[in-house]
Structures are given as structure tokens and as C-alpha cells.
Amino acid sequence: MGRILSGLLLVALLAPGIAGQDISNRLERFYLFNACRPMQLVVEELDDDAADIGLTQEALQAAAESRLRAARLYAVDGIRADFSHLYVNINVTPRAFSVSLAYYKWVTDEFGQSASAQTWHSGATGTHGGDAGYIVSALSQYLDTFLAAYLRVNEESCGSPAGRP
Image (cartoon, rainbow, N blue to C red; front, side, top):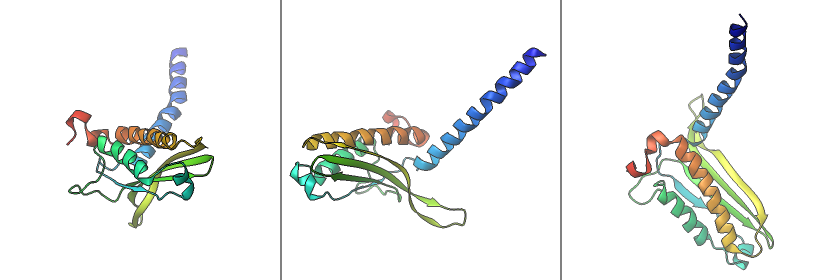
């Protein structure tokens, strides 16, 4: 009888964790799943303080495009993207910067209304010491974080890297 009671207690203790994990997985799938279709890239214009340290929109665009192309997720001529896009916004002050990366996708609510909505976001602030490369590196790190999560959620649609179309 004690073993049965212990077993039931163990199941009762583990069940909320299992249910919580399932909800977490389902939310992550909602946030990032799009069947591995290519996405657009939007890199916001920079302010004058960025130019003062040599940071250009072109450098940020190239870094982001490179990461998306490597994952075969960048929508280029001849590849039609769905309504999803990755939004990059970098703000620079004389001593500090912020990086903001957001994923938008087309969602439909319970009433059938559809719109583009931000479903994933990450970012941070820091100091740059006048080094534009440091900011590009920070953006690359956030892109890696996004792509790791995105590819994990879309794994079945994306297939293995070697088997990707």
C-alpha cells in the first residue's frame, strides 16, 4: 500500500511540471512556428550617434542577412516569403546602445481577424566604448539566439541542415 501511495504522490508532483512543459512548448510553437518559410528582414535606420562611431545600417543589414541566409530563411528574389519578418532596431548614444530583435508573423484570432503581430522579442542595452564592431557582434549573438529557437520549433518543416531545400 505504501508503494502505491508513493507512486501516486510522485505522479501528482510530476504532473504539473509535465503540463507546464507542454504549455511552454505550445507557446514557443505559437511564437515561432511558420513551417520554415523564408522571412523578410527589416533593419531600422540609425541615428547620428551611430555614424559618429562608424556604425552603418549596411553593416547591420549584412550581418543579419548573412545569418538568415545561412539558415536558408532569408526571402530573396524568386523566393516568396509569407507575412513574417524579423525586425532589427539598434539605438546608439555617445556611450551606450540598445539592441532589439523582434519576430512578426501573421496571426488569426478566434473571430477570424488576421494581422501581423510581434510574437517573439529579445534585446538588451550596454556600453559600446566607441566600437561599432562590438554592436554588430551583439546583434549577431541575438540573431543566433533567435535562430536556435526558431529552428528548434520548426525542425520538422526545416529538416536537417544537410537536407534543407
